[in-house]
Length: 106
Image (cartoon, rainbow, N blue to C red; front, side):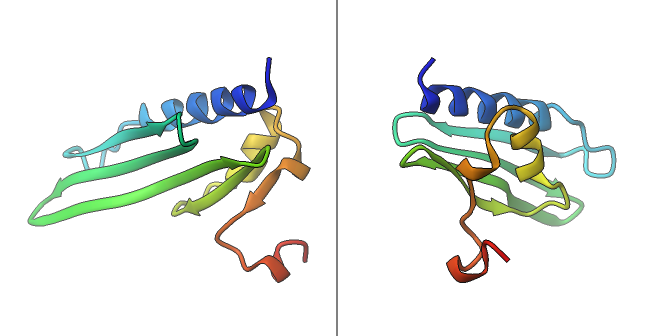
């Protein structure tokens, strides 16, 4: 299997698992997958009403560029890079896109 397709499958499976988690404290806020396989962008968003407040949050945003998985956003306390690595994506192919380049290897 092509590396990009393998990485895409790992990301999609991971996001589907997180999308399936029910939120007991915010039952009207639902998870939605945004999977743009053609342009290689993958997101998990939460949206809905919690009381009188509308919630719209990008939990995760991944991209695949130049054979690398870029974590563009992680608005959770989950160590998602570690999970990607455990699922078969080498750490050398995971880039924290939201971290300035000069700080990524510290």
